[in-house]
Length: 322
Image (cartoon, rainbow, N blue to C red):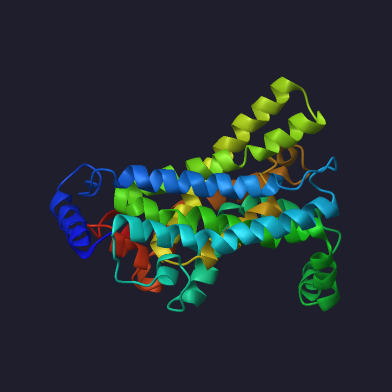
């Protein structure tokens, strides 16, 4: 793209940004197509990297996990190239650096590593209470275990733990939030981008359906029912972490929340109803939801994190960016 073309694109971009129902955002012709296709290509590359290794072994086998680690980490390391190429092609020249747009920065990092995680833990207060009641050790023993290096060495040596708590949260948030949102925000605006981004994230998780069909681990109807539930859950979760990413301007918050949710899993409400301490657990479920709703905006207030670089791509600072 020549300098004249670049100036023409940027002037068109600024001229076409006007009052609209979506935070005053109108995208240039063709920008949305480029952004959506770039995100789709990135999502396909991520999912495709899981299947470059042909194996008859199940997905939880250590050999399969190690191979997938290799390919997924390569794609994730190359994912910023997609954002860079998108910037070069569209001619958009934001002020912040590429790393800052992707939420890799130092300003407000301590708040970004704690407040979103505390907010998420508040939502899961019921499951956390249920887990605490069912653990065989007390609070003091649990704290000692958390600081025991041998415990963490055992965790790291477990390929499934490493996948669920470290590699999957880091790579998925890097690809589906840090790389996709900077491409979607100039096209759709921050609010709409929050709900578009999870669609790529949900589709990417359909590879679990492929695994179930491949190894016949459930009936066909059960598999597709599970797929529908998983798509819905990942879409809602993806919107939540996208919201955190845009509000805080940091990658670390979504990664930690993702890891936490992978550890806790989906709330076992049916088990809570049959628990001997069900009244206490159900009260904590309700209290957690109330606390989450009360803290949702205060805990993600940009005041704690500095100005989010990704919001510089939006024409209007209103909405989720303020």
